[in-house]
Length: 423
Ligand code: AMP
Ligand code: GLY
Picture (spheres, rainbow, N blue to C red):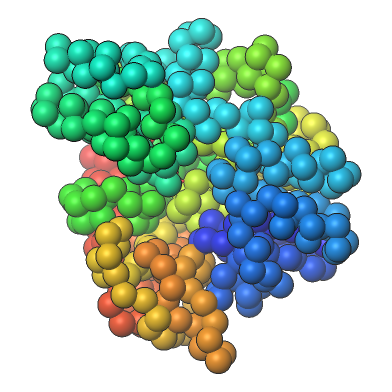
């Protein structure tokens, strides 16, 4: 069987390594993949957003199944295009991917169907948004409506910050058309939990919970990044919280999407905050999270390809999705200076004995050498019986991987660990 994967980061590397465990997976084509993924798949330099280029590729190669991982091609309707060519896909169609593609859509969906989330207002012009922030409760959160490379959320502690957020999103068009509409919402507090789920539109099966570490610096300081590390399971996601999430959030969301004629099939990611009033949705993503996937899939004991195909064929309820009861920790090694300005092009050395646990995000091959080529360069994941064990092993691995200008957080999992100890 020939499988096409779309995307080229650490998440895609984790998906590909997991798909490869199934002996049916003969050839994996990765578009565009990256220098590290090239060890596990055949990479072709076609961007994930080049929908026509991908469609052309598929017309010229035999593809039996496609996994579309990143948000943009999903929102741009790649799954719809591939399905028109008769290719079974993992990932939602554009009309369902809008759950991530438009924050206005997702907030209105939650309001209409009573799904717990932060209170909010929508603005389509800067004047009324500026009027609103004169009196709104602080802190407040200003969000661009559309995709903004994970940067479209601004937490504002003061009125001045809120005003300047409105100016930069709506008037200076910092995020282009994504900022034509904005959501201004209530600031929520509590631990964050990421729950990725498989859903075929009928059944929803949450994967093991995880915790991202979004800030660049130790102790959650510095700028927001794509994610500097993850652990799973997340100790704040207790069985009681999980039960409430299923009843109040997961099932109602699946039903709401069906009622809107936008059945969601694929991986639906629930970004949750466990507030004192219960779990609330911070955001939905229409795809696997990055770097959550790098801890979640290594703990999956069932076969990923089998589960994905069950989602596509709407037989998820008959399919076993089993996770290990161990813990995992992924530490991201980035280029120093990320997420702002950084140098790249440094040779990366990874000891052979840990290569299986390394997921490459930003690297290219040049004369047979692997060179750093992005902000987030790679992630290394370890599994252990305890969270502490997984964290220690992951940091041991980090010590053995080298490239110039490498930067990583030293406290991935620390907050989770204190919650485990405190329990
Ligand atoms: P996002 O880009 O949507 O993942 O949001 C980035 C981060 O902003 C989230 O992980 C939260 O930490 C924070 N955030 C988003 N919305 C809120 C909110 N309403 N209250 C507090 N923090 C928020
Ligand atoms: N790690 C957060 C995301 O994938 O959006």
